[in-house]
Length: 270
Ligand SMILES: Nc1ncnc2c1ncn2[C@@H]1O[C@H](COP(=O)(O)OP(=O)(O)O)[C@@H](O)[C@H]1O
Ligand SMILES: [Mg+2]
Picture 1 (tube, rainbow, N blue to C red):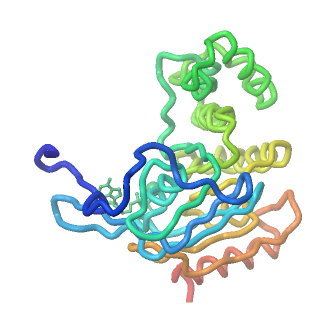
Picture 2: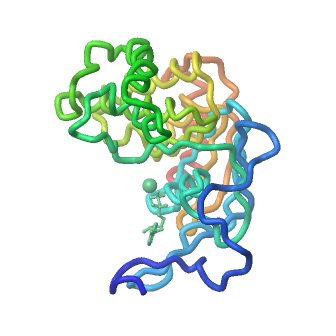
């Protein structure tokens, strides 16, 4: 029995099929793609049942950047965990190529240097420390972090920590990156720089990305498509195709227009 007050998952019983506990999500038909179809997910808490997602659908094609925007608590983090195989849906299907999660809080280990934090996903796969360092080093260099290789997280700026955290996600070698509000904790100037940085990185290292953000401007600046979610229980209520050349600026008329449309879909503008 779970400890008193612990959270249990409604989806656990009754068990309908033999359960394979690890591993996501059946592989999709094409490498690097994500298909979420009519997914529902609920949690049982001390205060009762919480429906996080109800009928959520989303697709991301290989090397496509899909942004997901929605109000706080609408199930965005839950969605990413489903895509990464860290949770199972109660209903609906999730088909996803192997996906690496960059969690909302940077989970850098304080006692490891930047290079060892960046190589952590490799270490977790059984790669030796020196080999992991040799693989991570050129990436730190490429991403302007070479001189901070031996620096521990506490001595890095917020932007640098997010870069190391992103690098760790990238070095996992998985074709899909699930980014959970990667810049939410940064100040406005750093956030601006980091958006440009991420846009640049994805240009030279394309990946399928599901980018969760509550910032519609960020969504329009970085993505190929924006999915707008309803308040909880979350589901997709609008989709905006962002067919604009890169690099994009927040002041571009077409960026402003799409941002307004996204805000309208969110119910923020009328
Ligand atoms: N493990 C859990 N146990 C209980 N409730 C949860 C759990 N995970 C998420 N929730 C609830 O589900 C809803 C959606 O959560 P979340 O996916 O974190 O939303 P978002 O990332 O959009 O803010 C929230 O109400 C949250 O409190
Ligand atoms: Mg969240």
